[in-house]
Length: 256
Image (cartoon, rainbow, N blue to C red; front, side, top):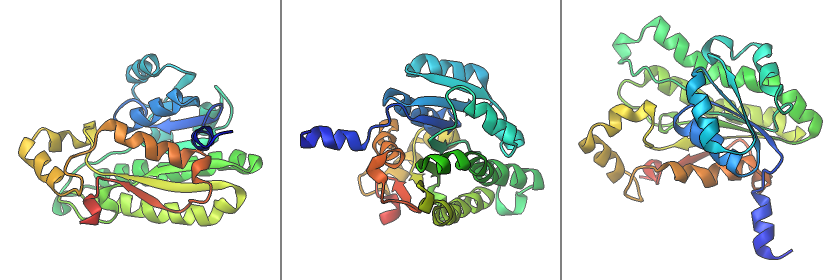
C-alpha cells in the first residue's frame, strides 16, 4: 500500500452506519450528504419528511430517513430503535439538530428555554446514551456533537442557546471520559458562520456578514464544503487518538 492510499484509508467510512440528526437542512444536511458520498449508510433524522426526501434524492448512496420531532421524542428509546431499523445500530452518530430562539436575556421565556435546552443538549445526551451500548459491544464508535462559537463566546440574544452550547462542550468531555475506554470517541465540531437557516438573519444583512468575515483569520465566512474534511476526520479511524475535543471550524474566528 502506498502512502496516498494509506492516507485515504484513514478517512474511509465505507460500510459504516451513520445517523445524522437535523439532516433535512443546513450543516446537518451537509454532514449527512458527505458521509453518504464517502460510503457510509446514512440514516437522516428530522421532523420535515419532504425535506428529508429531497436530501435522499440529492445525496445518493445508501440512505434512509426517520421523521421525528426530536424535541419531543429524542429521549425515547423507541427513537433509537427506529434509527437502528434500516441498517442496524449506528457506528457514527452526528448531532446536528438544533434551535436558536435568539431571545434577549430579559425576554427569555420558559418555553424558549426548555425547547432550546431539550433539543440542543438533552437530545444529544439521551440519544447517545440509547445508541452507545451497540458501539461499546463492537468496540468502535464515533459521536460528533455540534458546538458553536457560543460554546466560549457570548453573543446578543444568546442566553439559552449559549448555555446549551457551553454545556455541549462539557458534555463532550464528560462522555469521552466515560466511553472512550470502550472504543467510543466523542468530539464536537464548533462551526463559525455558515449560511444556514439558523444564521439567515446574519447573512441577510450584508454589512453584518462582512463584519463577521473580517473577524476571522482567513477573511471569509464558512462555505458548506469547509465542513467535509473535519467531519470525516472525526467520524473515521483518522481520529483514533482524538477524543473529548471541540474542533472549531471557524476560519480562526475564535483565535483572534
